[in-house]
Structure formats: C-alpha cells, structure tokens
Image (cartoon, rainbow, N blue to C red):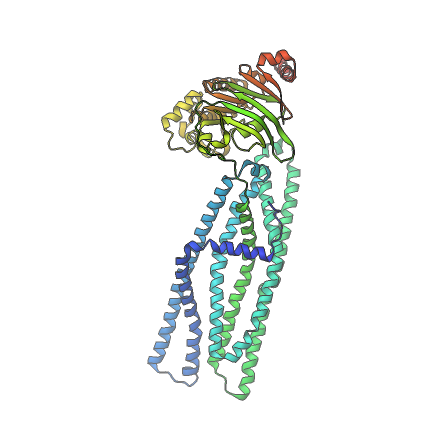
Length: 599
C-alpha cells in the first residue's frame, strides 16, 4: 500500500467525499425527514429577527401599542422559538443516529475485509498500522458525519436563509453583501490546501506510533533483557516529536485562518452596513427595525461561517483518515481459496507434493521442486536449519499461500478443489507458540463453535492429558483466560492447543515443533499426547529436536529450499550426511547441558 504521509490531491479528496456520502444512501428516508426538520428549524430561527423588526418599526417607533396585535406578535415569537428547539433537537438526533450507524457498518466492513486478506499482507504490514485504521481513522470518519456533515448542512441552509431575509429587507444592500462570499470561499480554499498536507502527515505519524507501541509492548521482555529501554524511548520520542510538529503546524494554520480571518471579514461587513445606512440617513429616514435586523443577520451570517471554518480541520482530518480506510478496503490480496471445480471431501488423508516451487517475493525461491508423499496413518518429519523451507511447506499445505509451480494433492485431489470449510476442518494445525484468546478455557478449546458439546470438549482435553491441570484451576473449564493466555505456562497453552485441534477430529495433523518451548517433564506429557494424536492420522511435523522424531515413518532433510536427504532416522544416521551432523551437534549440546547440571 502507498506511503502513509502521501498528500491527497483535490480530485482524490472529492472522490473520497463522494464515496463517504454513498454510505448514507440506505438511510435516505430518515435523511429526508431529518433534512425537512432542519429546514423548518432554520426557518423558525430566521423569522425571529423579522418579528422584532416589525415590533420596532410598526409599534415601538410610532408608539402604537395595541394589546391584541402585540400579544399575537409575542405569541408568534415564543412559538417560533419553541418550534426551532423541537425541530433542531430531532434533526440533530436523527443525523447523529445515521452517522453512528454508518460508522458501525464501516468498521464491520473493514474488519471483515482484513479477516479475508492473505497472510502475505500481514507479513508486510505493521499490526499497529492496521489497528490505527480500524480505530483512530474510523473514529475520525465518525466525527465527519456527527460534527461536520450534519452541522455543515445546517449552517449552509442557515446562510441561504439569511440571504433570503436580507433581500427581503433591502435588496440593494443584500446584493453588496454577496461580494463577501468569494472572500469566504478563498479563505476556505487556502485553508484546505495547506491543512491537507499537515493532517496527512499527522495521520501517517499516528499510524507509525501505534505500530511502534504494538511492537514494543509485545516485545517488552526482550527490550528489558537487552536493556533497550533508552534506545526505544529515544526512537519513540523522535517519532512522537514528528507527530507533534505536524500538529503544531496545523494549530498555527487554524489560529491564523479560522476565527481571526473570519472576524476581520465580519468587521468589514459591519462597516459596510453601517456606512450604507449612515449615507442613507442623509437623504431619507432609516428604519431602526431594518437596521437592527440587518446587523442581527450579519452577526448570524458570520457565526455559521466561523463554525464551517472551525469544522474544516475536522473535515480535513476525516478525509485523510477515510482515504486510509478506503485504501485498506480496496487492497486486494485475498487469502488463497478454492480455485478449481469440484467438491471433494478428505476421507483418507494422503498428502502429496508434486514438483512444488514457491517464493514469497516472486524473486527468490524458498522452495524448489519439492516432491514427496505421505500415506494415511504415517508420520512425515521435516528437519533442516533455519530458513531451509520447513514452515513454507506447512504454509502451502494449509493453503495460507499458493505455490508458484507444481501441485499439492490430498487423497489424489488438487488442493484447489477443496472448499475452505472442508480443508480447515479436516486439517489440524498446532503451532510452536499457540495463540489463546480472551475468554475461558472451554471457549479456547471449542473456539466458539456451538456444534461442539461440553462433553466433546472434556473428552478432547482428557485425550491429550490437559484435563490433569484444567480440573485444578479455580474455575476449571470456566477459568478465565487473559490476553494471549499469559497466566498459563507454555506447556499448559500447548496442551490446550492440542485439545482445540483434537476436538475437531482431523484426518491430517500438522505440527510445528510442539515441544520446542517446554521443559523436559512437560515434554514427556506432550510427547505422550502427541503419540495418541498421531494414532491413525496422517502427520506432517516440523522437528527441531531430532530426538522427538526417531519413530517417524519418513524424514525429509531440507537445505536452502531443497530436499537433500530422505529416509528413516536410522538410515539417515547411517548415511553420515547433514542429518547425521545435526544429530551429533544436538547430542553434544545435550551432553554439555547434562554435565553442567551435574557439576
């Protein structure tokens, strides 16, 4: 996606505004009623000065005070005021209701779109930036609807009404006042042109701040271990200063072009009106009521102008934020899905890779001509140094990515024929660092699938020996789980992840070294659980600890994206190749650990 700080052109801003207004179309009936009430409320406000002008010129000046006429005039004035309050309350309420509904729908739309983007998008995009678009940017779009568009319409209608009343009072003077409009427009144009640049920078820097915060909080243990607090604080301070500088530039622009400039125009207008009536008084009498009404309308004219100018900053921020939201919505990088005709089901669980080549960036291959087959009930282990392509094979099998060349088949059918539900249900994935969601233990095993009963949850937990520690928790299966399961040990999280996988009864089990982050005692429990899980299932496992895959039916040794060795544990040791060297290295490290612990 494009750079966060890129300034939007006027054409792009107009297109964004039109798109935002398109979200209001489903609410056109309620909008029509709200707009009608807006017109009525505005009319009631504008008629008030005319009634006062009538009182001054027709009753006060000639000292004529008929009770019935004055009572009717006063009653009319009170009724207009009450009516204005009534109409403006409901039109404001309806405009706010529509605005909140639009933003609610937009947030759901953005979140839904993000959920369907491929992992390649998340590999390149900072999490904090995505969160910023879902929260800060949509909040500013809400401000556009709530505090700008609805009130902007009201102010514009009010301005039109003021000029109508002015022409009714004195067409000649009202005509001269029209020359104020080009000056007001020029002021708005200059403000919008410069503010777009500053608010674009502000929005981009805020997104970077969110990304840096998200990264720092998730990696706080590493920051503290390596004493990186000062460096992180310095980098965050510099980024925060850039955001602050952009804000200050916007504030200076607001202070110069908003109220001070509009107040100057209002003084010029008042001087024009007073000069007109002053000159008029030399040749003909001046109606005090007309003068009062004109000055009153001028004052009312510049108040909406001041409000419009003050809301231009909110408008500009909202347009920039909406542009970022729409950029995310328009980003097409969907997760791979069913691409071939047919609707097969996974019955046996045979897995085949046939000449598969894959690259993340389209230039450097991370897998080259990978071919192998795993029969139902067998275990295939993938070993190799970091970056050899082990995780990429799993990513392709799970269809998180599509291969560039070759074909992946399950039960003899191309992977592209299976729909997502069939694939995600029949393939069980357990990662090295299992992710847990806020909720309780039961919901983390069931994964909010109402079709899975409590009894099935208990059976799955017992099957992988997770029930042993879950039943001792204060709330048992209803024990609360905090963010990412931080209150559980690595082994406990791993066992819950096993239960989560087994409750679905998958035909194919995909493991990303399930024992890499646990202690020896817990590893024994997990290994027993793994052996039960593998029973009767096709298993593809990434192995870092070679001692855990001695009993695998087949081991593939990967190096720089290619299969360099293939065989059983004993055969590969006998060959004396890369696997043999890796095994000796691990055995030597284990012996050193044992010796150091003994001493």
